[in-house]
Amino acid sequence: MKTALQTSPHPYVGMWVTEDGYVRQELRSDGRYDEARGTQQSAYQGDYQISGNYVTYQDDTGFTADGYFENDVLYHGGMVMFRQDQTN
Image (cartoon, rainbow, N blue to C red; front, side, top):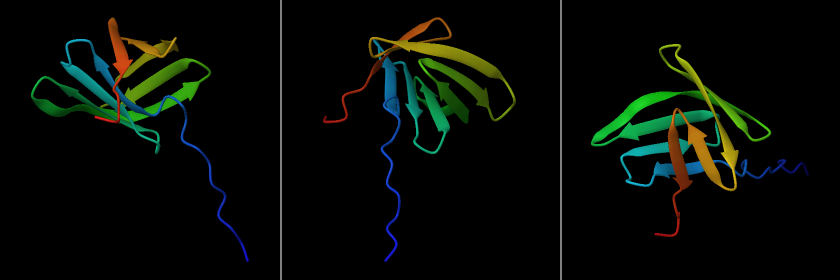
């Protein structure tokens, strides 16, 4: 009997938010991201790749950006984002 190979999601997968909650960015396990701004859901969507502590983004219009993770904080586009507690 074959068993499916189970892999854990990347440790940076999840929801990242600015301190004021205005920007919310979900890094999904399928390599896609969805970013909300204020009341605008899905303001930006696209693909992302993580290499070490660095993340590169390409949104669906072709725009590219990058960021990095340090001490469980995401620095991206001049923003400081924190992991959202998934237990609430």
